[in-house]
Image 1 (cartoon, helix red, strand yellow):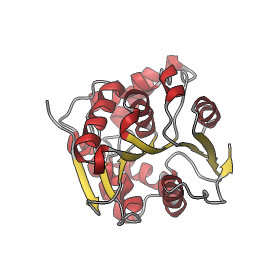
Image 2 (spheres, one colour; image 1 turned 45 degrees about the vertical axis):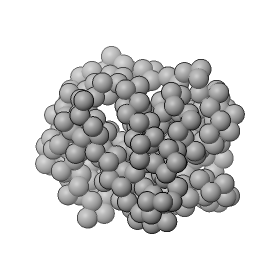
Image 3 (cartoon, helix red, strand yellow; image 1 turned 90 degrees about the vertical axis):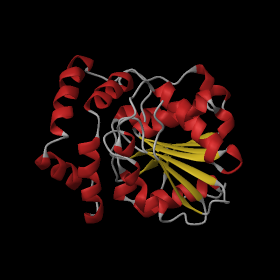
Image 4 (tube, one colour; image 1 turned 30 degrees about the vertical axis):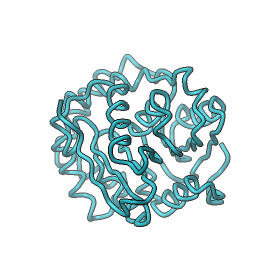
Length: 258
């Protein structure tokens, strides 16, 4: 079976952080965060159908979580890692927590939903339209602007969208719209921070509270004034949050209780 692309950066003997990106992008989305963790061993993965893993078929969230857990066991320091996931990466991170809690030290999960998305009758045609638009140059430029990408990351976005498997994109959305955490999440003891941008949808912000209340060692926070991809909008705050959480230190005061 083809293996996922992983870029290892930083201090190889230090504790490991594994970053899990969102749909339609790739590991490059974490460049600004990884640059602030030279004292950690960073594992930056491209998910199935994305980036340098676009040759790997997307099977399911469960299958992807199993692959991530295998990477942690084989490549992380002492076979355990802190995980950071946003959007699709957050859903994958939750699946790792449910299926392989023993490989996770601390977790930061941002921008996830729990429960069926509204207006599902429109989701299939919207997904088909988006899978077409994501390959169009003008749409890539518009998306880069809306994501507030620095100039040096715009080329990464274009390259990533060209590499994106259209089938993977459609399969992921079909699964994501029905995503639910399982009862197993209630037995996960890894300290977990559930976060959302203040401009996120109500469903995502409600999920912060819901999952934080389900897990025995979880907290929920809102990052005010930012949207879904807020690691681009407020990179310094995002990095400071991750560092504080994995070090069991006080979280940045800019974050609000959910």
